[in-house]
Length: 263
Image (cartoon, rainbow, N blue to C red; front, side):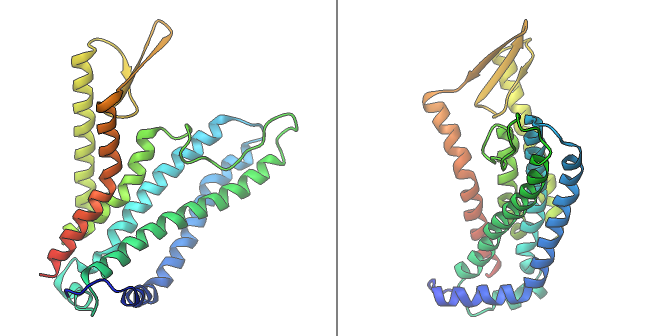
């Protein structure tokens, strides 16, 4: 339905959505608490000294669980428009396309906030238990910095990008959206990694190399020394801009596809 955006109508659509799914969302929050308790409890019981490895362990766990649960949640947001039988009642709601789409996008943002809140709550409890056991001369654990060095950049970026990518897939595919989006995501990932490795081998042949950000940086280890190389200037700006604009671009493409569903 072609109508201009109206805040009051948007609120009513949001209220309708929450009334239909609030029980599922609350159950999901409970499951998140349970999963994080199961994941962090063993390390909490074993840790009696301060170690940076604890942060790296928490960071890797956060990235994988956030990416996986975010992918599943995003795939379910617009499942209602996956088939005509389920989609027609939703598409015929007396609200604009933008209002109905923004409700789904807002749920994705709320998922991010809830996931981080649950993680920090459980981690805070675990760290308070560990800090009581750590010797007084050692540093105390603080909440994990999600933007810090404990999480490799490529893993952090992929985990944050995944929900947006699966949001598009949930609208684009009519059937088996999660499976199809996962397959395309893996193919794109391996293609980018292959292309990045190919370019590095062309520029720096016959060396053992590693890199965190494709097409942006690489480092070598030779004779016990480490050599870092990274883009600067305009090339670096272009790569950074592309990475920053990719999530909102996926949201825009998803909205265009959502509008096509109503035609």
